[in-house]
Image (cartoon, rainbow, N blue to C red; front, side, top):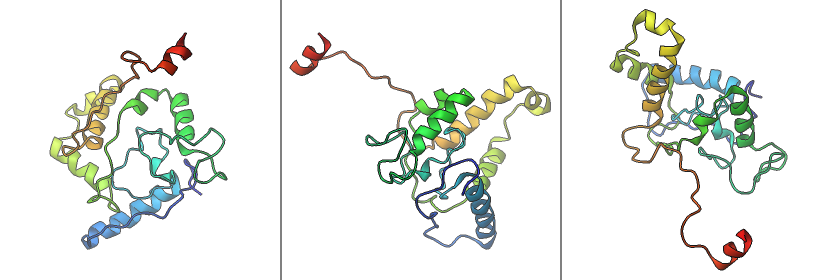
Amino acid sequence: MPLFSPRRFQLPYYPLDRPSRWERVFTAFERTVKSILFGCRMCGNCILQETAFICPMACPKGLRNGPCGGSTPDHCYVDPSRPCIWYKIYERAERMGRMDKLLEIQAPLDGRRMGRETWLDLFRRWKERGGLGLGIRGFLDSKRRGPALDQFFYEVRQPDWWQGDDKPHPPTYEGTMSRLEKKLRS
């Protein structure tokens, strides 16, 4: 049973090709730690910091952008014996004051990364980027560190190959209405 997330529904992913020995050892370590803490499935496209540190891959459908249409706050649509993971994410995000993170549309899973570690990838990106570019004083200043970390993780979770939109789109109610919609509004 994970410490910070409900139990996962499916087994973790494993890579399709054979990584180096060093990567296999590090991946096994990361899989163990993240499985205990978050119920991680090792999707290789980690968005824990955006989903209030609850792994969205614990959803039986593997949904990364919100709940399906059949779930309720009390139970999951696929497995009624468990709570909907996305309701848990929304509750924790609201308590943490991070609801704005949930409006961003997340990239789909990259099949090449599935089953692989994400911590080494984060470290490589950090090294390529030269850290946050703040220096020690800037890193110690939380007002400067927060936006710099948000930008760093934005670049990680919105990869170059993803041409999707990262901005929230509230529903619009303009345009043509059906007769039923006109009656319901009046």
